[in-house]
Length: 126
Image (cartoon, rainbow, N blue to C red):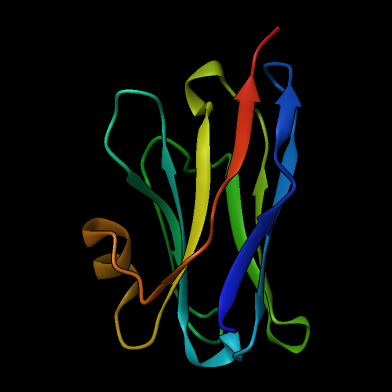
């Protein structure tokens, strides 16, 4: 069964950090551009960050630039999202997605994905 599984979400105070993981099973992530997306209550899903197959190209939403870092370890079949200096407005369900043929810009902007995970909740609150 082909699936993506996110983990690492939770409750954190403003200014804190979390690292999300996106692990694939049933297929190899090395051939896919991977993206992190989020959806807050009452809002549309938005692209947070995307990374190319070898990690050479990345894309970030303006709202997270300088605070979030996307990375990947193809040997572990996992992609990460390091989130620092978290703000209450970062509260959302975070999803990862895999897309076989795309640019990081297109994937994030158009919210493209061949496979999607079920999401992990991130809550930033004091």
